[in-house]
Length: 48
Image (cartoon, rainbow, N blue to C red):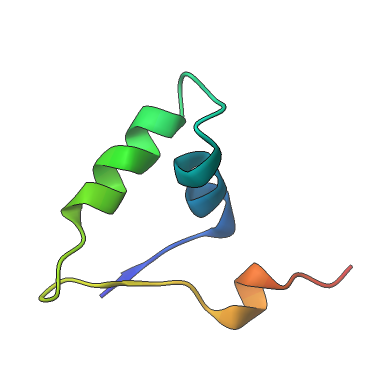
C-alpha cells in the first residue's frame, strides 16, 4: 500500500504544475489492486 499525500492528489487531479503534475500522474499510474494507494481522511480534511 502506498500512502498518498494531499498535494500529490491535487497535482494529479488539477494538472496545474508542469514540474509536479507529471510526477503525480506517474505515481497514480503505478497503483493497482495489488499495490493500492491510501489517503487518510485526516489528510483530505485538514484542520488549521
